[in-house]
Image 1 (cartoon, rainbow, N blue to C red):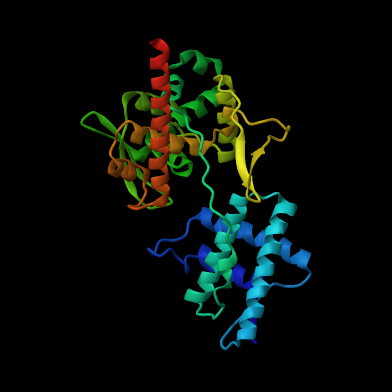
Image 2 (image 1 turned 90 degrees about the vertical axis):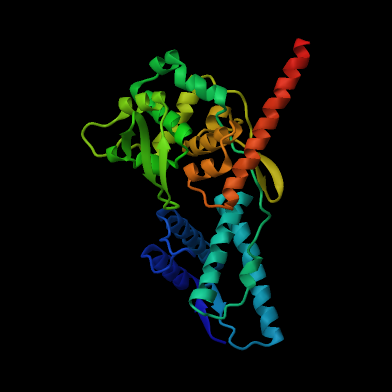
Length: 347
């Protein structure tokens, strides 16, 4: 039977994904982040193949007997289990991360089947793990109000942290992905009849968004606005920005214990810090917290889903967006429960 080797085929898959020959179903180029995920997966596959001490092959099943079908099914079943164990033991990967690697592999095999026309079968369907949803950490409206108005907190911070705090507040208001926020240019800001707007073309979805800005957001943008470059904000790496945010939240006193729970081999397990301690609230905060916070708070405050979706750049029927709706409902229920308890205590 004719066969191809997995790694060379996967390298070709990455190449056509990066140069634009392979695109999304809607015809858009794949994002840099998506291609980077593919490159990370091939690094895992290279390491995995070296432990096998033999290349991973893909049989082309132009004609097959029942025996050949069963042999190939057994081969990929063993390969899936071996790869899963390799990721767990050699890279300490949790279930959600292994599931993401498997998702890329299934995308690769579908590319071979649908775009290359190769009869590779559907054995890649075995690359799956249960899907788990985690409750993301958000900045609630009261915490956000404090971050906006607490001048004592702001003046206590060194300049670089104060600037990151301002950028974080803007992100919590407009709901942009960090990469879109940091790439805003001065031409993205305009004034019409006294109202300031941000004009954004989101990188991931290609959606044009016009966002009205409240006065205090304009004050922050004016304070952050760069003088010598075309960009609106100082360009901070995502890694450094995340470090700044954790330091800011620690300075703000948001240090209560909030364990990080993740599934490992189907069991909910607490993930500790490098020092072996439980996570605190401040340890969870990252650049993506801004987007989650903005979208959830807008939904909680009663802004129609269609308006929020347009602001966030999500497509109609987006599974990701409906996660925010569910999150907003949970958030609302939690605050209602707290309010009822306080009401009973008062009585």
